[in-house]
Amino acid sequence: MSSTPSPCLPPSPLQSEKAKRYDRQLRLWGDHGQTALERANVCLINASATGTEILKSLVLPGMGNFTILDPSPVTGEDAGNNFFLTADSIGQSRGEVATRLLLEMNHEVRGESRQESVEQVLDEDPDFFTNFSLVVACGLSEKSLLLLSGKLDSSKIPLLVVRTSGFLGYIRLQLGEHLMVETHPDNAAPDLRLDQPWDALVSWLEEEGRRMTTMDLKDHGHTPYPVIMHSFIKEWREKHDGNIPANYKEKKVFKEEMLKGMRKRENNPELYEDEENFEEAAKAVNTVLVKSAIPSNTQDIINDPSAENISASSANFWILAHALREFVVKENRLPVSGVIPDMFSDSERFIKLQNIYRDKAGQ
Image (cartoon, rainbow, N blue to C red):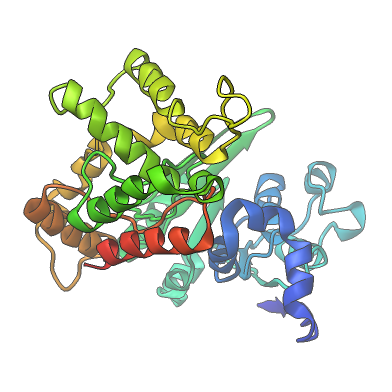
């Protein structure tokens, strides 16, 4: 076995340099995703052209550790189709050469190679594969693959099986239940619950709504849009059997009525003042003014037997799902997120509104 650790970077200014180096991917998966990648320990079986390309794609963004398991020497065919191998390396250990060249691509990654077959490792060190977070098998025989698959399945370690032939190839993933709470919605709708406001929220919204009639233009134009929407929702419900606008036509009428609440100019009553909070309210109608409901995919999760019956061995995901299930059974709604979007408002009233939502989320 040969080990080739990469040199360590100086401790300072490590964070700033890392942020600059990995800026693009940090935008994609954030600090948490980068931390998970840096903690990853991957085993590659057979340093074929496909296998080394897979590792290259993990080494460049900064994976933690890798091990190449490959008993074969470099051949002329390898030198011809593998970017990491050259004619000078023919006859040398394919795993060692690939490891050395891969580590040159990122000095923060550590890697090693072992010149042994899967069967040898399983016989001599049965627990060897239990240290990895992922095993990638390239071009492995069916006999070896069956042995490896059984071992990894019992240890709940993901196995990625890759086989290529020219321009053709396939990938198979052996993976048990895989739980993730890593949502990155492109356009998350604000969770304001204006169709089902609670007492504290109603009290504040209506108080501010009453005050709007006597406010000066500055305060009127800096009133948070939930106050404006609540006032007009209340009027709408009185005329529509307690319902909120439910379709495009109704929401269009609702917007038009709401925009009439803007102040008119003193020197020209035919024109409205430029009040951005009213315009903001009109834009928010389609996303904010919706009926609060439990999404079907969320309902499927909380109805799952794993969420209903938890034990000491349950994953954290199912423990959280169980808690959510208990809340929904009791309250018949999802918890309030406690987060409000940025909006046109003065600081005092924005903070007050924010605290009302935070208090409800903490109950």
